[in-house]
Image 1 (cartoon, protein in one colour):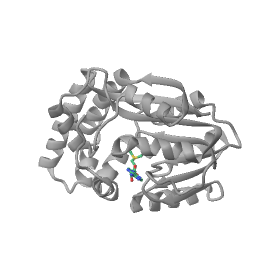
Image 2 (cartoon, protein in one colour):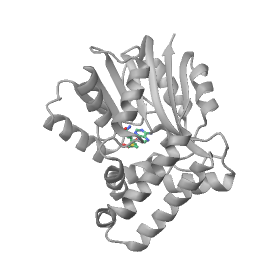
Image 3 (tube, helix red, strand yellow):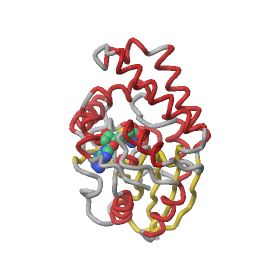
Image 4 (cartoon, helix red, strand yellow):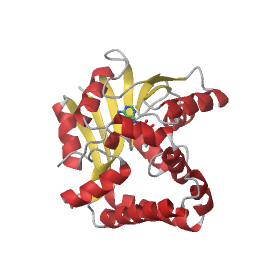
Length: 266
Ligand SMILES: C[S@@+](CC[C@H](N)C(=O)[O-])C[C@H]1O[C@@H](n2cnc3c(N)ncnc32)[C@H](O)[C@@H]1O
């Protein structure tokens, strides 16, 4: 699969700017498909327990960390590279009284800023699609996990039906993804990094329904709010709507979707 020349500065521009605010409007503070329900399923599959110490790779607004601290009694470190996200995450953690339980570090997640064997689990939700070297993220996750530690993540993936170069180019350019890994590719990267795969779930079918749901919210409820975020630019709103519509179509065709993975460091 061809990789687009999209890098961290392009992603930072999204999450430092209006597009990041738009994603929060559509998805909420947890900027991933399925919000609370998806996180609960992932944490349950991963066997997250009170007292564990976890790392959220690409922690954005810190909602993943706060979800895990509130519902599973863990402590968390989040790493992200976008200033606006880190600043908002820090403010929200403080406002909710979690300062002693959650800390953030700033940096590209292809280099995790923690020593070897630090964490009981490493967590990621719908984010590594933004990273060109996904193998490096997984090898860093393996490095910072304690032996027996758990890797648990979801991500937007190329679906089982596969994308043509033209389709991949269009959706990845819109989303600012260098490329999307596929289910088998992630399974291989996990094994290549010496980890034991515990589960690998293809969530492509439900993903397509979520894209429909986001389009419905934007066109039938949140149009005013979305327009305000993008400077009341109706032409841009319609262009983005066209790209979301394209994404819905390829998702329904099984060409793009979402996967959930749980693995153990042996
Ligand atoms: C979709 S949001 C993450 C959502 C978050 N996992 C959640 O569930 O709420 C994407 C985040 O990934 C971060 N990101 C993308 N590529 C990165 C990289 N190479 N290094 C660090 N952060 C990155 C962005 O800054 C942004 O905050």
